[in-house]
Amino acid sequence: MMKEIEMKSVNKFYKSDVVALEDFSLTVEEGEFVFVTGRSGSGKSTFLKLLSGQIFPTSGEMWVRGSNVSALTREQIPYYRRQFGIMQADLGLLKDQTVRQNIELAMRATEQPLKRTKRRVEQTMRVVGIADRAEHYPSELSGGEAARVLLARALVTDPKILVLDEPTANLDPSAAWDLMCLIDEINRKGLTVLVASHNRELVTIMKKRVVTLAAGVIVADEKNVIYSSTAGDIFDERRVLREREERRRKQQRR
Image (cartoon, rainbow, N blue to C red; front, side):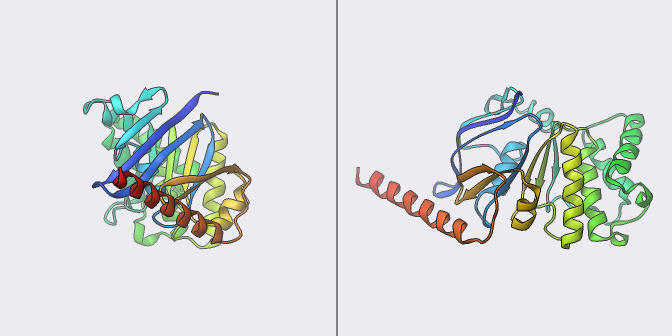
């Protein structure tokens, strides 16, 4: 399989002393389904935003589908981003637009021809099971239906990599499981999927590869992980922060 994503010793700092990711190295193969989990503030969203070109690393190497992300020019960045379908909480639905119009927005943003836009929107609505809600507004949808619309908007441009940031955060257990089963079906068709989630029960049931972060550091990268409590995360976070502080003190002594 081809390496879809390869990150080598990537660091992301905000200002000079706020560590978002530290010495972050990760490889994802084409067609993989990977959960990224950890406590709030562990670096999950930062990782996904780095990957999709919404922000850029402070240092380190990042390759996506054979392209050196650090070497991209300003003109190339918008085209690089088109490889990704993104579903995240701060990219919600427009309340004054119908389901169809909300999904069309993604096609317009990538300057797709009108004929292809109509065809892709119809196809994608059928894939996620919301074709019968096409002319409804967000206020008329259930939480599960709204999540499917967000998923459709991420899929409609036919991306190579699907990036989902807490896709089940506002859903009840039944709707969350339903959405994850749909995402699993999409992955089985060959699309690479990365999901940031703190829903430990769902992560356990799905039995996928799980990368666990603590204070911006990868502390585990395993398959078929079972999460029974948050104790491990708390311990790992404290350990990472303690080791980081010790390194800073040694540097100051030099």
